[in-house]
Image 1 (cartoon, rainbow, N blue to C red):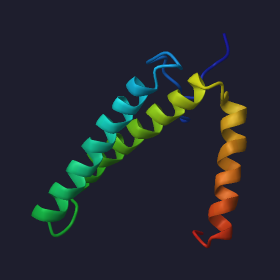
Image 2 (image 1 turned 135 degrees about the vertical axis):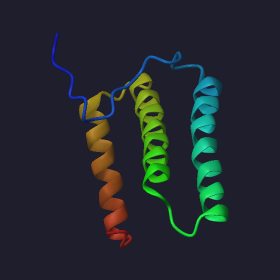
Image 3 (image 1 turned 180 degrees about the vertical axis):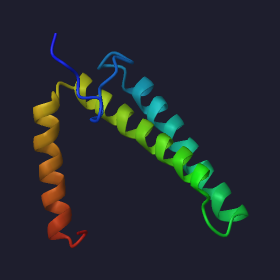
Image 4 (image 1 turned 180 degrees about the horizontal axis):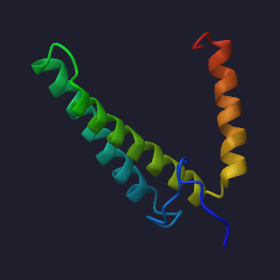
Length: 98
C-alpha cells in the first residue's frame, strides 16, 4: 500500500457518487459552521483570538476535505484534481486575484 501524504486533502468515501443531495447537505453543513462562526466572531470580537482562528481553520479544512471527497467520487484522482486546480489558479491569476 502506498504511503498517504497526510499534508494533502485525502478523500473520504462518504457517499455514493450519484447521491448529489447527500454531498450537497454535507458541504452545506460544513459551510454553515464556517459562516456561523465568522458572523459570531465579527459581532463579538474586535480581533480574532488565536483559538478562534484555529477552530475556523479546522472548519475550513473540513470544507476542503468534503470537496476533495466529492471530486474523488466523480472520478477525479489526485492528478486530475491537481490539473483542475492549476486551471482554476490560472483563471484566478488572469483576473488579478494574485
